[in-house]
Length: 420
Length: 185
Image (cartoon, rainbow over all chains, first blue to last red; front, side, top):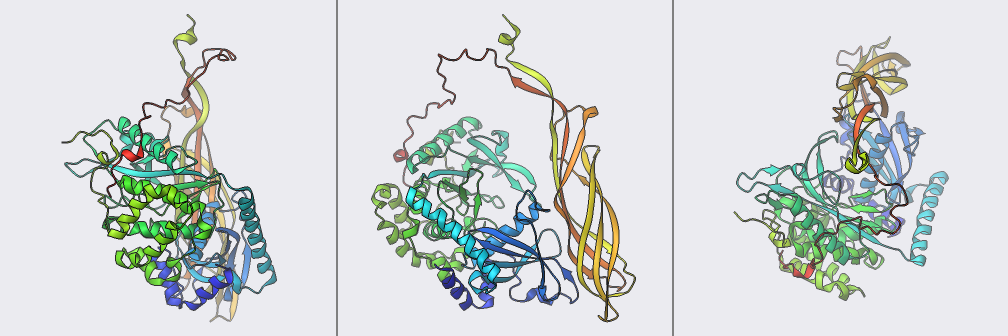
């Protein structure tokens, strides 16, 4: 969608719709004016961040009456006075714009009084700016992205796929979670992952994580995943423990099924295609517990850039919960990423009730829109090559099944286990 | 048989990062301006200076900064800037510490990953003071000599020329076949 059309749609939403959309997605907002109810004369720090191409292109400290006094802060983490604050402001601004269906614009963030709590106070689509300097800044960023995309289409890309899905170890008699760190190192193809406390500090390493080597195709990645499952079975030598996956098999321990892509330019449209054609249909199948990890985890458009130049799509729960799901997701994601320019339906961005249904786990509302999305996928030229793995997933979505995240996943994956 | 054939593992003593820590905090300061403030127009932290010192099992960051508060008084008819230098000591706990490090060789360093910045300033309920909230964050490292176990290459370079190695143990995973897995949700 062109940035002018995005701005038009944004403009047609009421302030309270914008506010609710942010809140529902886990972003603090005072767009509805609630921030002004604070006592007058109190000073709060504010930042204005301009975003284009899912990156901050300018950040300013905002001061003074009418917020008229603005001075730039260095964007380069090497020279920024406060790199961790800058990272946080950039992430919030990118996420707020994305959630409001915009690919570029300015977000003003206001402090909530400490502990790195910031709320969205004002959002301005790039198309609404008439200042020549700002217009030039956006055009420059857009031209740069366009150039990279054109290069990609003319030279083709060498896509690499990767993943790091998680699972937990549970004592079947007590129901207790046994820390994966008792059996696994932090690093490696089979490792463990941290659960973070309030200030982002790692507090424990309870979660097992599989990091198969990246592959150029879905089949290779799937074989890699099965290999790491076998390796995990050898390392976790207490076979009495059961393995659970899904979104949140144990309350308070949200699990992710992150997909990694490199060799392709990350754009907001690519993320929106993954949200609409992958995360939305998959959400129809999830167990009730999985929905509870949102909006802190599993929010739409959750991505992280990787040092290898690619990115990680973090919205999905741990699809290790079923081989049908894992096979379907791996093949479907590879199909979506390589064909995203022709998958143009965006119910999550166009229909408020679908966005709400995703965050509230309303399956029936989501299902109404899925048939069209599935048809788009089925009509792709390359679909027949993946049909064997993707069709069973679509069948389940149509039938309205849900996965069970309480069961032991080992028998499903042909992993040796000792039944009690 | 030479020593290196028998003992491929050696302990060496080296200077290494033996401890790391990070601490984010929000702190409150009270500043008393010469006039009773009506409202706060701006608040800035400048001239931040700090150094790190070893303190037991942690690292202390000792520093100072100037708080500048732009405020109005006399029912918003006048403005002024109140300045005050504050000093602080922040203990950064170490998330890991190598127990084998030699205490006599310890050096510490700290870096402000977020420069102290005022996030909120308001007039106290009594009216005479300004309460300001400041966020700051430090990461700290403890460097010392420690023992590290290393694998020693027992042969000279060039001895491997005619040999082929499998550096990665693939294990017995040739039978992996996604089609063998049942299609259950």
